[in-house]
Image: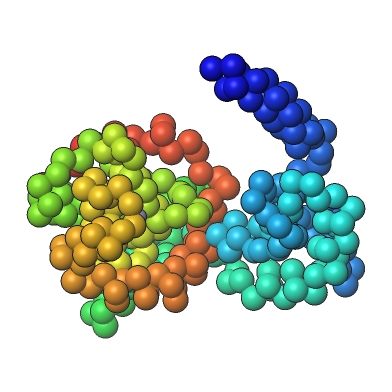
Amino acid sequence: MALSSKFLFEVLPSMSLRALLYRRPTEPQAIQVVHDKAIYLVRVRRHRQARRYTLRIQAATREVVLTMPPRGSLKEAKAFAEQHGGWIAQRLHRLPEATPFVHGTVVPLRGQPHRIVHRKGRRGTVWIEIGEDGERTLCVAGDAPHIDRRVGDFLRREAKNDLEMASGRAAERLGVEIKRISVRDQASRWGSCSSTGVLSYSWRLILAPPHVLDYLAAHEVAHLVEMNHSVRFWRLVERICPNMRRAKNWLDVYGTDLHRYGMPQSDPDPARRPVTKRRARA
Ligand SMILES: [Zn+2]
């Protein structure tokens, strides 16, 4: 007993002191790097496990992130980022251009190209027309400034619908129950599953071919059985989704590209969207 209390006494103060030292509340969150007359904003993150300075580009948000060790210095971080200015510029340049939803934009819907055409003066909101040649058009009524929002809302609704059905099918096969499904704009993941049975998906899955959306649904629903990525988990996914490997490959190759569509920064709070309130079918 005496030993353990002494141990506590000795360990606790130094731990809290260390926490205080590392917190550095006044430290800037980002640094500026100048390369070839262009200024780049680099977000700085201290990471407890980081052993060195590393740079990476988040394709979905076009953000440059520098990770540094807890004891690293901002001066060193800045020097490191400046040294790699050419790399930052090159990698950002290589990212696909952002594609807003405006008249003329071609958007993939369930993996098939659809051209956005503004039908000013027509009734309705958004609908699909298929021409005799098989060409698909995403028609949008109303005023031009509202096209982006209308197309965005339409795609989210379609995503919600398809994801509810696909998740319902997977849940039925595994004999599990889904509590709720929400669809949002997640930059870093395609889907997630909470221990309370709530599934979240990225609406952008509606842009991918249906077998990719089906795979994500199978993946998240399988987490209701196995809350991990063990061998058992993957076997379960493959059992209800024979296209698993093909879908994973597709995401590896084309997944990043789906993030260029629409304007994610103008999205209202997803929790307030009416589409998230509907219940899962099937
Ligand atoms: Zn997973």
